[in-house]
Structures are given as C-alpha cells and as structure tokens.
Image 1 (cartoon, rainbow, N blue to C red):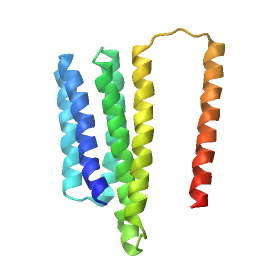
Image 2: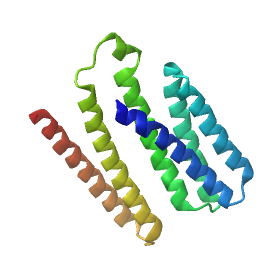
Image 3: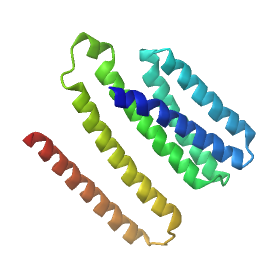
Length: 177
C-alpha cells in the first residue's frame, strides 16, 4: 500500500497545480484561486483520513479538474497543462478508489489477501493506460487533420474493436494465472 500512499497525493497536487498554473499563465486569477481551494479541500480530507469523505472529494475533484480544464481550453490556457491536469486527476481518482477498496471500512472487516501484489499490478496497468492516453492526446494536440464523418466513424469503430480485443486479451491473461 506504500505505492498508493506515495502516488495519490503527488497526482492530486500535480492535477491542481497544473490547472492553477495554466490559469495563472492566462492571467485568470479567479480560476487560479479556485484551483488552490480545490487542492486545499482535498488535502484537508486526505490528511485527516476522512475515509468516507475522501472518495467523494476524489469524485468532486476529478469533475472539477475536468470542468476547469474545459474552461482553460476555452480561454486558451496551455492545452498541455490542461491535459496533464486531467490525466493526473484521473490517476488520483482511480488510486483513491483502489485505496478505499483495499483499506476502507469493508476491507478492514475482512483481510485482503495479496494486497501489495494487487496494488502493484493495478498501478502498473493504470500508469500504462494513463501513459498511452496521454501520448495519444498529446499527439492529438500537435497533429491537425480534417477528416470526414465517415472516416471519423470508421476510426471510432476501429478503436472500439481494438479496446475490446485488448480487454479480452488482458482477461484471458489474468484467468491463466
């Protein structure tokens, strides 16, 4: 559980700092203050170990960071900072829920076997997925192409099939262990 306890605060702070920095660079002080308030509220709940509130704060924080990133894009804040913020918030949200499942009230009532192994495997897949998503989104920020609706639809179907096959492959690999 040390890995989650190390990554969780780092990703939440990274998300809120990236949002705040993006708005500060656009000279939007109200949104910069909102980002500071967001990290302060989350940190207070996490440091006090409010387990019941922490997942709610993580949910609210993820929604707030995503909404603020959308506003940032609309006011021409640096898109890369908005992307970093959303990816970091997604990682933090996922790790909060993992921590709750492995160490929450229900987990305390029953012992979770191989929790460290579960955590390592989960974090490995999470970082792989986040890295791939960040890479593809970063590529989308730099490459501009116009496609007709037919091509976009075909690419969407291809992406859905690739995701389906990837998930099937991962599940088969997990069942064989």
